[in-house]
Length: 184
Image (cartoon, rainbow, N blue to C red; front, side, top):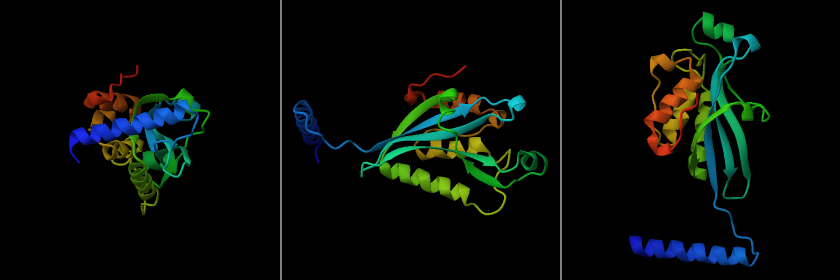
């Protein structure tokens, strides 16, 4: 379809939706999910290590709401620290604690992209054997995979392996198109 024609069709659809809205007629919402990238500062004194995770919010084509979050962790911190690869798990944050974390940036994805992200989360959860490793597969590597899947430039330099907030600030710098600011 030629570009001028696509623009004209998009304007026509927008005008129709605006007219319906002015008349109080409900129009279907555009299905999309926003992926928020978070870090948690953590504190060894409070029994919680620094962490990074993703939050999904939005709506799918069938109108169902999405409001969930996922991170990757070892089942046993002691096992992860003392004996190398450890048993792993996908963890979720309590909804009331998320506002106390650092939201670094957000990316909007289609429902199809959301489903691919969810499939990847299941692949990490169901990976056989001991998959968590402080140096090779920690929460940062998990969120890095999510970031790569939504088209961000990402890697995990060694100086950020155990510094989720600093790592997400680094990813912010690598992706200026996000328009995000680093978090102190």
